[in-house]
Image 1: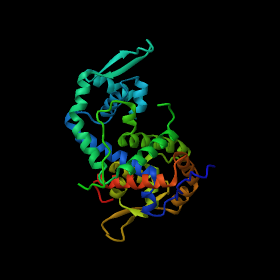
Image 2: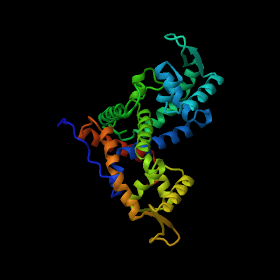
Image 3: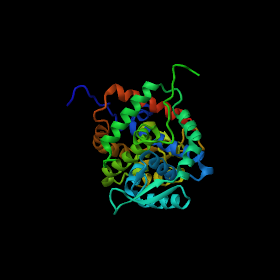
Image 4: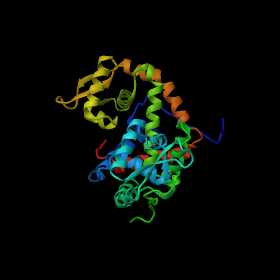
Length: 160
Length: 160
């Protein structure tokens, strides 16, 4: 065991609210749920709730993805990811293509209209983030992103 | 504006995988989902998936809670929290009582059997956590818990 790495002692079962509130999975679960609800509320008038928004964001970051990749990255069950992509294609925000790397593979990417939509909603997303990160210092946040990224690497099952 | 607090610049829409991977809500969403799936897998043989486990953990930490409190703390929609409590009562892991503070209020708490069950599954929960926290240093983790706790305070809508 590497002596420079120590694990936070997990007191389980919990015996106080403080122990639960210092428990990473509890914090992750509550934050993810609260964030999703707030984002859905902020984007309700655009009809971009839940998986639609997550899929658009992943396409914006990665450019072109298969349904399988989209499903993993956007945390959306595969058949639901397919249906959401279908709906995004019908509303003109995304388009399907044959992969340039492999003719057998179908990929999805944003249309110019999809890109514009993300630019239009950006101020609301940035506002939500500003509120989430209120009173958090830059260095603390950098550490937090680093640690969460390492955790994701520790527990994810796929290469992406 | 307090000059000692700075916000991480959010580049939205994202233009690269790296921008998405440094985006807190993305990390929170993927980690929470991955954690929930792994915990469900680890506890499948005990039938303690999802909301059952979250509710037992909250009762262990807080002692006694109303359905409304349990619903918020365990991130479970209220009617689903009620059904899960009903199922926990039927299997002898939890019991309903009249609140000592207010005779009109019904509360839920663990039975000795519920407490024993948590002790029995503790090694598996601790293992999952050890894997999640692999290669994370103690100080980094402390910062991470602190920052996530502050974020939860920033965005939660309830006192608990």
